[in-house]
Length: 301
Ligand SMILES: *Cc1c(COP(=O)(O)O)cnc(C)c1O
Image (cartoon, rainbow, N blue to C red):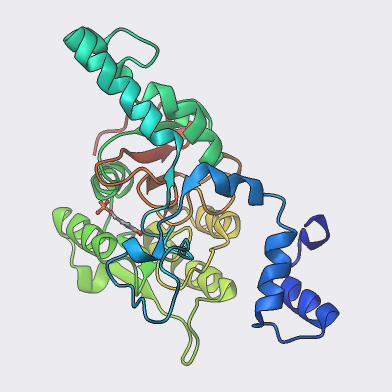
């Protein structure tokens, strides 16, 4: 698929459909991409549900013994075949050595997060020392906002999307109240233009340029959970910093999905979870990122 590198997905689809002489939405175009996908070999590492086992199948129309087409990685990715092996290893260890499992074995539970920090740092483009794996996403967002949102009477706003994920919206609202400010005046929400589904980067940058002096924190998603829009995190971070704002991203739908370079982009903070594209499931650890430039900040609130 090298020839598609740097192409917008729409352009790649158009190129293939015109070379095959069929419509961009035809099955031939999809089959062509499948056949030429250099990552296709990875598919066999995952368990794909059979159609007949799904609770909503109408078996009068399809062959239930076939694997379903799974497009829900945004909510919970497929089970990696290795997950069972790793879980069994830990269950065996628990059975055999009980409490000693906290400190013994190849993956001591007491430092469970240390085993995956290196891997997770690569996924989000961070140094290992900038990443912590803990809690759920919204808890991490609150903890990060407690450190980064220090409103003053002149700089008290948080810039976010009008259709942010509901729990992000509520977290921002409660952080504003916690500091004694009024969400009515301190939540600055960006909506797409009339008739458009996604935010234009230029409009985001303009809002930061125009309102930046009153914005304490810019808090957007990396990939919008509803529209799938990938935000230009590098440009947004740069624009926010130019105006003296802290810039953070909720990467729930970006981690494991889009290429991230949180360190190089200079992002101040980020949070994400492992229970969407990273396939961990309910109760899996969430992540937090704080750029190393803040590692020695000890200013009291
Ligand atoms: C999934 C998701 C969450 C979920 O947060 P929890 O604390 O795990 O409930 C939060 N924000 C966004 C943008 C999400 O996509």
